[in-house]
Amino acid sequence: MSAALRHDLLTARFLRQTATFFFAWTGLASVVGQLADWVWGLASHSWWAPTVAVVVLAGLPLAFYRSWPRPIEESYDIPRTRICIVKGDLFAQDSHLVIGTCDTFDTAIPDIIERTSVQGIALDRLYNNRIDELDDDLVRALQGAGHPIESVPKDGKTERYALGTVAVVDRSTHKLFFVAYTTMDTNNNAHGTPDGLWTSLNSLWASIYQHSNGRPVSMPVIGGGMSRLSSIVPTQDSIRFTVLSFMFASRHKKICDELRIIVQPAEYERLDRLELQAFLSSLKPS
Image (cartoon, rainbow, N blue to C red; front, side):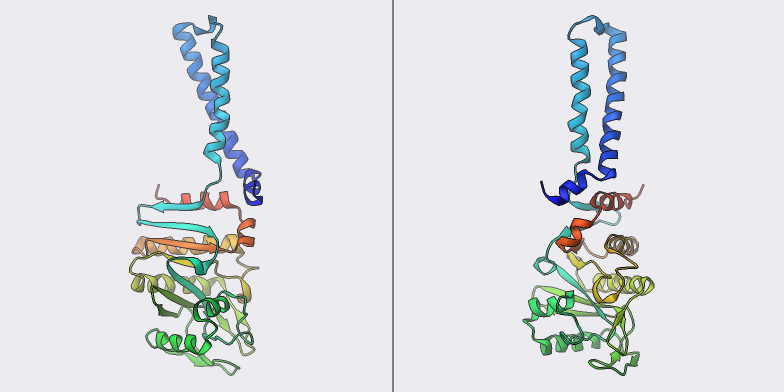
């Protein structure tokens, strides 16, 4: 048994759901049994009590099956879309990709951008560490994404764009959505806020609606790393924050067929996965 599954089976939500279903099953079996005995007088037969016991005990495996942890995903009819929370590698997904960045769209590694960040890994995996090629792609993409709002006296790139600016880069079979959700200061430290994140997500959905042609989109958990948001919006809350923003936008107009939030394995192990599944299910119209 994996550590993740063992964690899920010991959560209060799993135990509560299992117990609730089992007691409901027991109550139903008792009511049906009493009615059957009242109509046909079955209690006088020697086989009746063992049969009732077997029926009641059958509720236990059914309760486990009903509550057993499953992949964290939900499909919706209004809007017709799907949300999946997946443990894995963002860059192994067969979909468009979202990559978070700062409002100056800096790319210098490791002096400004951390090599282990999503953007740093993207440079390695998608560009084979060719920074000039990435810079050229970003320059072209930003020409249609708005104008710089000010100049920042710092090392690296100095043109600041509005939070929520999205640079859409074409890479053969898929697109990269570089979304600016943090502000870079004069010391090249990135800072983010929940308000800025919400604004950036709204801009991201609008860009995906315009450029994705409805295809699935994969994104990392937004708000960790150098953005310094992880203490304010931890992983579990960041996922809910992102999903809620996506659903609000999708009810106005369909954004894409599927949104995948890719969680690093170590972070995935710490998630309350049953709670997240319940959250996704709660977003279905009543």
